[in-house]
Amino acid sequence: MIILSKKVNAGLIVGGVVVVVVATVVLLILTKFQPSVTLYLGDGVFDAQIAKTTAEREKGLGGIKNLDANQSLILAFPSDDKWKIGMKDMKVPIDIIWLDKDKKVIHIVKNASPENPTNITFTPKYSARYVIEVPAGTVDSKTIKTGWAAVFDINTEEVK
Image 1 (cartoon, rainbow, N blue to C red):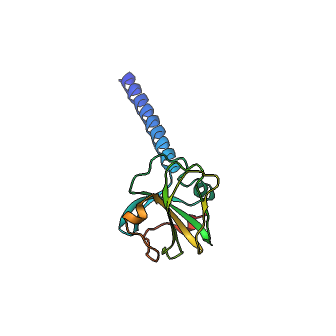
Image 2: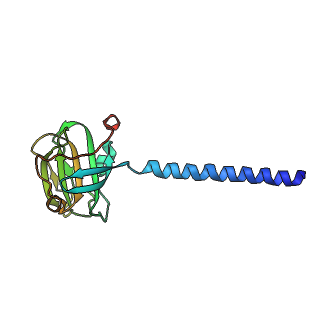
Image 3: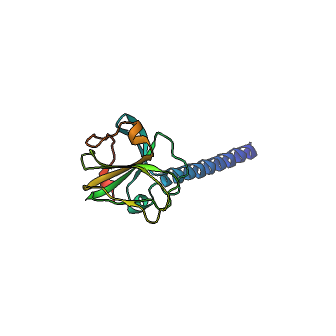
């Protein structure tokens, strides 16, 4: 009976260690990815990643080789400014949409191409708080227009 209980205890210990290791790996994977929210803009509903830090905003969609029609990136800034968007490391063409602090569309660039990425930056006419990057053609296909409001919810206290 004593040998059986030692095997059971050893099994419980090994099982507990495995659970802790798996939970740690899952937590690390989840924290590595940017949070996502649902974004409503024009006639579109998008799964939007959020870039809240300087490093995340600088990377943007750089390096992404494929962007699904319902994918987007919201670059959230800590203040209003004429935030420039560059095409460094971009692999796919995108539409770029600037929003003010009330999430109203104030400027749009359609079909920003990744060709000659070192020389290309886009600047809005007015100060913005958010910039949204979506696949090229989305502005037209989802009827996104200046003056229209986007709907999404992010914790602005986390924007740095």
